[in-house]
Image 1 (spheres, rainbow, N blue to C red):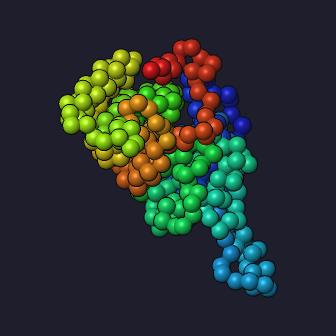
Image 2 (cartoon, rainbow, N blue to C red):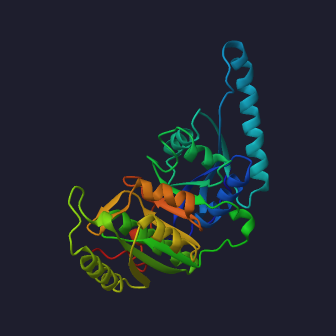
Length: 310
């Protein structure tokens, strides 16, 4: 059970209900290390392991079921004893890791799901398998992905937070979350807007004067971003996935909104989020479109600045 603690100050309130996917491997350890940074001081944290029966039927399946459950619960107890934060444990039976985590996240009304990116661990099974409802796609809450080896890296800090930013509501929410985290961790925020061919409406031909149009769009974006208080803003031309992945090399956390379709372009669609899930050099925090938003300091504390509206 989560130990009782004094109510956190509004300035530190972030993700109050956190679900962490663990599998006894490196990916699960990475996820736990990241969850420690993103969870509010008094957050309700749950470690979850998704298990399934080996291919069998009839009596063999009936015998295997309690053994698989016992193994899952044993793994969770071991992880909880070694973890740097207190958490409840929940074993979930499902043939799909992503679906099992989503189902538990909905039941627990989780604000954040944290997973690792190890391709041989839990999140690797989600990304590389045939499950159409992976940890990012269709998630009922925000999803954080820890890069492989994060737990052993020793760089568990949030000094530099990056935000993928366009004119969409999703990117505005991403900036709000980044501001809330920065207020708690005393971080610097860098916002990046990417102008690309995706900026051209679907079905329309590329204008002959596109190079000059793109250059003006980049200049306009830089000017607009310069007005964001307390944010180092920049804009560039290129592929959104690649530019954000490159930015991640200089960050401690990258925050993006998923499926945001702003006037600047289809900047953070599902394919971009999945690309970053594989290629980001730092932890990635994705806020899926329509997912439950965490309670932010700015919701009740005017001292914490909200993201400016475009």
